[in-house]
Length: 97
Image (cartoon, rainbow, N blue to C red; front, side):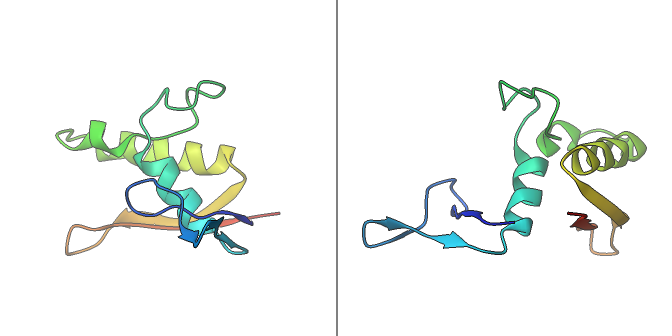
């Protein structure tokens, strides 16, 4: 998927006065789906996960279900999902189109 790139603060990445566009922005889409709170997209209030809401939750199955739903609804196939031994969330998902 091709998209305008943003930095870690959500600002557009610029080259001079031009916005940068990358032909492979899948990882950026995944990151945005994970970090934007539910309701963050007015047109699709349930499109995102809102990871911060799960920080103190002990229900990891609900988190996994929410991630699978958000990624599947966005056109991805989720192959693997889990938390590795260092506590990092790992999602193996690719767009099917």
